[in-house]
Image (cartoon, rainbow, N blue to C red):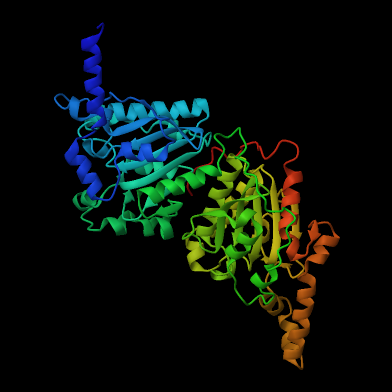
Length: 514
């Protein structure tokens, strides 16, 4: 048989490559309750669609070639629900998934290929970053730069990263540069691990306190969702991908629905109390408005006075930015500002129309806000909104006070349509504070202060009602709350009539973190 010896050699090498780091290391990965890189790829992709690239790579170290196939990274192309993607999976069984020459070269090559062909990138990340001794010395570090494909990614294709094991260095750089990051609970994501910190700075800290999921959920916002295990993580990534186009020049996938776009929201006035002093969960309102009650929330533990979610209206993907009265009465602070900016950049870059649901007493004020650059945050939020070019629609539910009225896409901020509920209150400041400031002397001189206050509060409420703004065409309509879905679906239909939701992508190169 021609080529018999060569074919046998090839077969042996590929069989060895499929064994990754060997049975003992695979067993150790399983003992942690985690799948191997190959198992993750197989479980995530449609059956028999994976085309592996760089299978015969190995570490550039003599004597261990047959033990390091893939050089700690499994990669190639495959399909998810019939959609082509580029997929990368760190192989913890080979040199702890650290990054050597072939590893870095393959990752960069596949990233560039995804950008060239317009394919989403899926990355299952874990590992210790740059490999020692590969990166040692002036030559080593000079030959291990941050990949330009990542630094200039420019939101051309969706980049999804999952932190599936302890991740330091390279995996972390990818995660914080991604459009969407999932972290599995029990893992750590940081620049360096606790051991390195203890040696370098004498700081003793646990992995959980250094970069555990709660740190990123509540304090840094560097991960968007959190998973219980590998399967849960991959399911979350698939859910997010369903809302994303394959690349920035396509619209997101349309999904047909039997949910009537003109459906009346019969329970909406039970969900939202007319009494402004009573809180409610904005999630309940979102659920009743969107198609089939299905939405996908990002950063649910971070900046909790603002909700950012993906959903569909009459089959079309939308991004929803909504104040959350259950937390700080819906007053956005610096974390909420960061959350809004990142979400606006995401939606504008991937042709996702934005829906704004107002119910806020204004921005959070005080020393904490000022120490976290609140004025800068407010203005960068406004800048991102001003530069965004996807369709934008706003509904003022109960209140929209002060500068936040504009940050939530109020008048002059590029909205295609703005409506208000009849109970809405719009003003520079809230009624109690406003009356005290504006009419302070009048109240002080009044014979019956309580009666005078009631009269002034009634006047303030009248001036804040949406009808005056509607009369001057500053907002487009005052609607029956039960018609909120109907208004949004129709406004969206017309706003996307000319070229769908394709925008100019002016925010594509904005940083992925603030």
